[in-house]
Length: 144
Image (cartoon, rainbow, N blue to C red; front, side):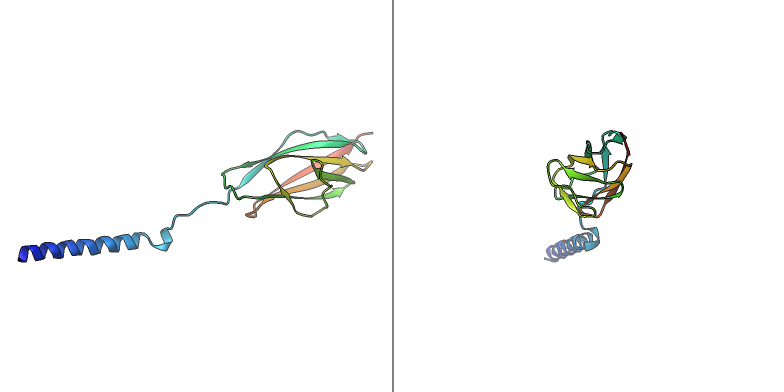
């Protein structure tokens, strides 16, 4: 009878130790982390250096993710600081300076139309829903 009791005690002790070990190993500090904030790069196809007043040029842009989180949203804003012109997404209305616009895809085309007889320059900022941001600078000489 004593042998059965000792085996029961040993089994119960092992069960308690196993449960304690599992509780300690599953503490909040060791929770599984799911990464959803991935940096990105922006690639721009070559564009002309000269643009004439009234001329429209195409700017092809691709956002290159370093990881993939399906709920990431991308945004664009721009500011023109030299010359005059309009920037638009495909056939949409021209963007307003410093307003934030949602980008529906990671590969897209912008169209810049010159309204100036002097050189022009503007910056485009592309950001994601996690605060990562890339700045693109564009400069065009006037071609007569």
